[in-house]
Image 1 (spheres, rainbow, N blue to C red):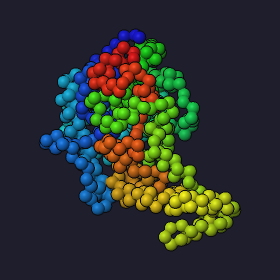
Image 2: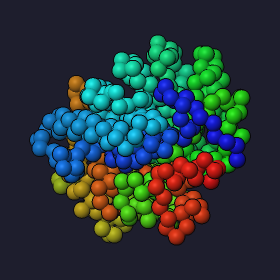
Image 3: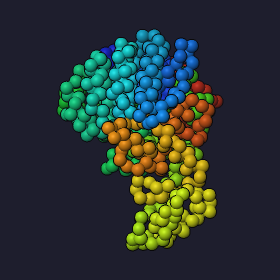
Length: 465
């Protein structure tokens, strides 16, 4: 294993080890502060972060607004309070060591307002802002106004070229690094393009080499690249370390910090991570963001697969093979199915899947009555957590809507991520994880259910293990 030389990030030399940001209270001040205290770059999430009262107790996000726009304003207030809280905790825990970054998603609701709201109060405590989930053109302008470095997350050299030419070339001195997030191996939301096959992972080396070549065109040969997604043992990446073709490289860990003593996730979640096997992480497209995402295959995802499988196309009038009338809804309004699809729909009905719900794509899905009620309730309770949502048709525009029918094949991402972050219930919630998470069960470091401190983990990583 080659020695890990320090790298300059956000104005200071640090270990080339970066904690990946994970939203909804999973990367918090405790975990990121500990990572920074150990000499690396800690990253707390400002995506609906937890706020605490004066006694250190969690302040629950209870929405009182009757309209979606009223709840949307409450969400912004909660988000700013939580981000400020976690920044202060992270700063205190870091002991002035390493660097502290804040992670946001460009497609989260009111991202610019939330960024300003947090940084107005704690900018001296934060050294960098990491941002992905979309094309964050304005992140450079915002962070530069506070004298803070920005770290865009991309999955290709092409994406970075577009960002640089449109906006980043105006703020080159504040570009801390470019995060390459592997769209097949990373956890959470993934940046797969329409031209890339989700079933055929590509080797990250040529893709990162292409990114470096693009960066060199713009005079960024000394700007680090942070490799994210699929990194476990650094001994497997020795060809990347001190590689003149790639230039300065750091490595980001999103999944391994989940299993530390400082990690705020529940004991049930930690125990589940220790049992994962190859293939247990499922790359899917159920997210209301429209992005692919990687999560542990569990009953939550099984139900979403079932919803999509219990699906048939319909027409509002007889046309072609769609000749069989089928009553939908409380009023029994007729739509028309093919003879084969009507037979399937009736069969699902006999199994209890009696509620037909329309999708934006002129299809029907069939669910049980209790699930239909849950879907409708979640859609009604939407608080606008995304800039645009497929599940509820919310959008943060003047109309307040995407203009499309809400899609019952998706789910309320805010609800499930809050639930898994604040309870012991994991099997029936969305559990994001990187595709290497099965290695917890194989890695001798975790034998016997051992859960290390962040400091112990970082010491271990430096040995290549």
